[in-house]
Image (cartoon, rainbow, N blue to C red; front, side):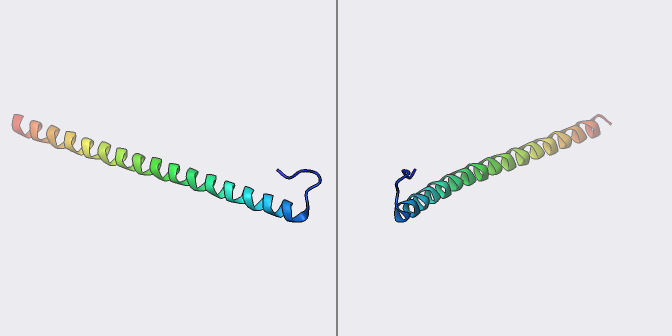
Amino acid sequence: MSSPNATPAEIEADIAQQREALASTVNELQEQIQARARTTAKQVAVAAGSAAAVAVVVIVVKRSRS
């Protein structure tokens, strides 16, 4: 943060530094969100695959009992 007696150049430098810090934080958050989205997509795929496998087993068991 700039002091009350900061020159315009010091204020501009402070703003530039804060922008860089904010951009870094935004990038980190974006990476975390993307990682969570990939994990969620994998979990959905595994759940769908498991449900399909269970459905196949149920169909096979029902047909074998008929």
